[in-house]
Image (cartoon, rainbow, N blue to C red; front, side, top):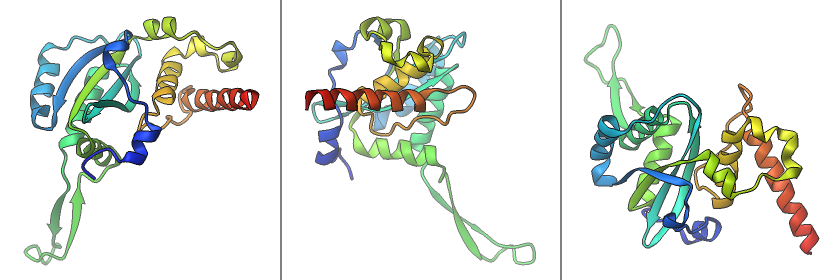
Length: 206
């Protein structure tokens, strides 16, 4: 599949990036300019690791931008560089012999078959252009009032989890999944609350 399928386009939200005042572009690139993007991030990007930050990756298909993935990290510079590298890690067959038969090709296995490399290569096949952005947490919360009925998840203590889950939910980010509830992560619980609130709204309208 070389482009975003029409059925996917119906479920993902088309975005106008210039209208999202709470995002800041970190790098913009195509399949042919990934190396330049990595070099520019290494040489020029100065993002501190003083707090957990939220990022979003957008992909362009034709004239339309879609959100592909959302994430958060204490060092998004390192994480984005790692994900860019994953886009380039093509599977390669490696043949192996054995101790007594070192010159015999007895079996083969594929390198770079981890989930991240498969996921990010999939993104590279779907879209023509990409834009990696940081979501400013304070600006996002200012533009999207915190829902009172979700206070049970201690949103104020987990704003980065809320912003990640809410932005992914609203844009129907194509490759996003909530992180496991480890180390106090609240993404899954927040997502469940968002879905519950949406169902209640739908029921009230009906």
